[in-house]
Length: 242
Picture 1: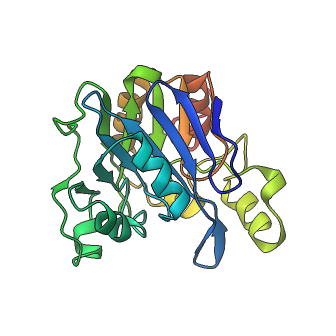
Picture 2: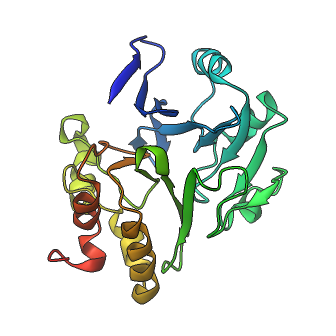
């Protein structure tokens, strides 16, 4: 995983041709300190696909503008939406894509499309996707960047480095099962998957993509060994012997 920018203001990494991760600031989620990360894919037409946009500051905007025009702003689930408004204001021609349930949560945002199991024609053939079914609380759309064999998830895997954890949140993270290298979906999210058969069907579809790398919004990225790592991170759903 190559470091593209060593600037103190901007941490950008490339996982292969036309796929980048950008580290954002730590945000408070119900009082817990959550680091943020977005993914940027440059599509064959040169337009940028921006997944889970982080806070838009001058350094990030300058880097984005040097990479290409922002074409798509993508929310992976209905709790990843905080920066969509500012990004849409900065890039008004970008199409805004809602995850399931987000239109209702953010009625003031003018979404152009809602994400489903089929990729938008603008990125079909480059990025695959599916709605990970089974939860009664939160449906997340999972993506797979074919050229780099990279799986992109938001909260279905949280994989915090133990070195970054301290205090009450460190204890909570261990109880919730979100500490690397054994991170999973948080405990409350896992408990919401009461339709386990549907969830396993979604999992098998994701495994069939054959991911090599796994990028998540929160925690340590997996480089190589993606299928084995995926089964490990989803052992709560498919068992440790799968």
